[in-house]
Amino acid sequence: MRLSITTTLSIFALASSASFAELYPMTDIDMAKQSGKGVIEVSETLAGQVAQPGGIDVSFTRITIGADIDINANINRLVLGEGVRQDGLDNSDNTDRATADIDFANISLGTIDSSGIVHDFKIVDPYIEFARNNTGDLIGFRLGFGEVNGTMGVEIKTLSGDVQAVGQLSLGLFSIDLDSSAHNVREDDITDDLLGLDIDLGNFQNMTFTGTNNFYLGLQSTAINYPKLGTGAQGTAQSGFWLNLQDGVTSPGLGLDSIFPISVSNEHPINRFPGYF
Amino acid sequence: MNTLLTVSLVIFKIFMNYLLSLIIFIPLSTLAELIPIDDSGLSNVDGQNGPAIGFIWDDVYATGENIKLTLDFDSGIPLVFTDFYWVGHDSARKGDTVYGGNVGSYDDPFFLNIQEESITLTDGENLSRTTLVTAFPEGTYKGSDLDAGKMDLGALMTLEHASGNTDETWLLFNGMHLDGTYLKSWAPEGGGLAMSGELNFHADELTFQTATVNAAPSNNSNTAWQITGFDLYLPIGQTLYQPATLTISEEQQVIFEIAAVNSNTAAAFYAAPTGSVRAENISLNDWNAGTSYIEGIQLQHLKVQTHDLN
Image (cartoon, rainbow over all chains, first blue to last red; front, side):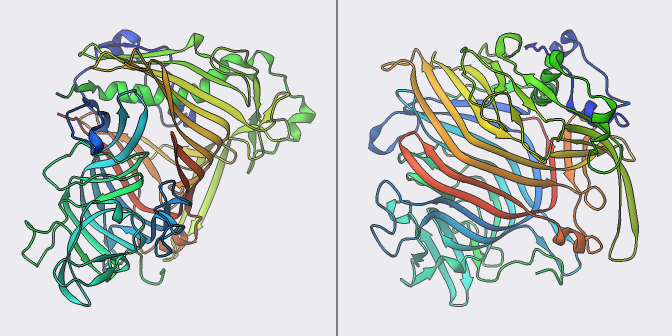
């Protein structure tokens, strides 16, 4: 491994003269001797290796950061892709459709229990992956995670994406299975497989992820099948913003972990200290 | 078959330092035209709180002629970063004539100072801390005889794919400023670096533009992911009750952590400003994805620790 670099100074050295007693500059020769720490991985999937809608050729370049991320956070609102869609799959075409591809409110990652203990949402090996067609055009990219574990609270107002879940809502035990198709664009409800009920996605207040390895958020100019990580399910990402929530989210206590990968309920998890809601 | 490339932790750290150094130090090499401030001028510079050193970068520009970073992997596929530039807003790019821009002004300089803060927590505990503050001007940048107040920043990366094609990728920040961004730092017990700060970033336009060279059938096709009207505000820790720390583990891995909120610090934490991101318009080639935004970001705890892949 060879490294050519012309600049070795650090912002941290500038930032705190009181704290860099243990820092010392490395020469280019010393730097060139460093190897064996694989924190960043660049991988390629060549055209033809993943079958694509319409038979187009798509190649992928994925940059993965080797990192364990423990996070506890709250987000008031997440809105992606607000405005008119060029494919007409918006409220100009169907007044039932929402005005954004993804619209989530009151997102919480992790929980705080009654004893004030902070429980993190855990992410392993985040990556960004770029998709190109056979002329080299960038036609999509996604931000994903090698694995996620923990509890996410959310009020889903609109979803463009895939969800496969089992949950026990106020209606009782039922399964939820949303397959991947254009019909999943800007939806605010889905149809329950078993009972045929229309379920408002706002009921997805509490999702528990266990070993999920196909959790990603993408933006595409055309429908794309991304390379699949792990064993979980993954459908076709449609144009616009797309969230894949199909894989590896277990359902503790229901004994259905191996069948249905997502556990949901309509009780939003608590992720604030008492008195600060 | 995937081609796996591995970059060392050391290279990662160097690279991050490199990018940060690029921002901080490259202009220092271009200070030939700095004009000294007389006593009268200095007395008008009040920093933020207490004594400070105020300075500006005058007629700054840097282009890629002097800067090159090559990551040469064992697989023989090099990733080359080159043609960095930092110029006055709306200066010509990609080898054309460039014009310098100023960062800060006598009225509103970049500054360094020492600041002391204190707070009383819910249980009555008093905390105080003295930090070194490094801050961008809170006013606007002063571009020289161009679109005043903003700068352009860019870098060119090339990556040779296993297919034999070479991608050239421009990462462009046009019309950017970092008004109000600051970093407070101090030396915590136990070593490492402790910090807090706020990132306040604006760009009129962010462009991720690629050109595939030698790709059949259409050579040099240009594609772009473009964001216009981008704004990011993100508090990073808090000096007194939620410090962020940067340390290196015994395994030579990087650990960045923002301390967890607790019942004693919750009142101050929830009263503090929250983070936000907004992009007025996002486009990916011919697909217009409209407006996107994230509001009310509160990090109650964050720990990032690198590890070796494979």
